[in-house]
Image 1 (cartoon, rainbow, N blue to C red):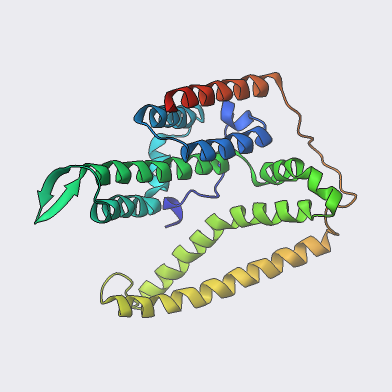
Image 2 (cartoon, rainbow, N blue to C red):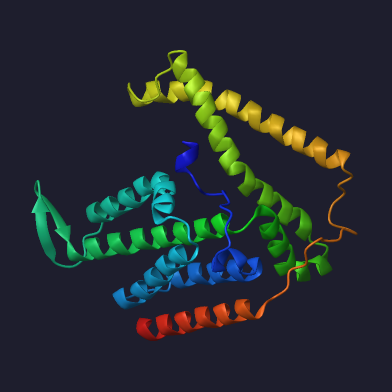
Length: 265
C-alpha cells in the first residue's frame, strides 16, 4: 500500500522542475487547476494534457512510477466515467448494451470530467514529488505574507500543511504494517459481505489512530524541546530568490495559457 501511494512523497532529483522556485510551482499548479475547469473543447484539453505530460518528462521521474502511484485514484476516475454514462441522457444514441442506451453527450461528459480529475491529481502530485516539505512551507509562508498585516497565522498554517503532506506516506506505511499484522492473525479484509468487511476494518483503524496521535504528541514534544514558538523572530537558512530560469519558465507557462485561451474560444 505504501508503494502505491505517492501523494505527499518527495523524490530527490536535479531536474528543471526540482530546481524551480517553489512559489512559482505553486502558482503554476493553482492556475493550471483553474484553467482545467475553463476548458471546453478537445483542443484546449489537448494543450493542458500535453503540458502535464511534458511536466512529467521534465521531472525525470519514471512515468511508470507516477502512474503506479496514481493507482488508488484510478477507481474514482473510472467510476466517474461510468456514472456519467448511466446518468447523462444528452445527444444521440451511440450504441446499446443490455438494453441500456449510451448517448454521445454522456460519453463526452464522462471523458471530460475524468480527464479533469486525472490532470488535477497528476499536477498536484508532481508538486509534492519535486518539492521538499520545507520548500512548500517556505513558499506558502512567502505567498501569504501580506496576511500577516491582519495577524493571520501564516507561518503556523504553512507548517501544518507541510506536516500534513509529510505524514501521508508515513500513515500509509503504518496502515500497511498494521493490515499485515492483522492479516497474520486471521483478519480477512478482502472477502465477505460489505458489512463483514467494514467490521474487519475496525481493528485496523483503532491502532492507526492511536499511532497517529502518538506520532503527533512526539512531534509536538520534539518541537517544544527545541524551543519552537511560532514564526515570530525566526530567520531562514535558505532564502527564496527568483532566478532568471524561473522567470523564463513562468513566461513559457503564460504562453501555454494564452494558447489554451485562444483555442478555447
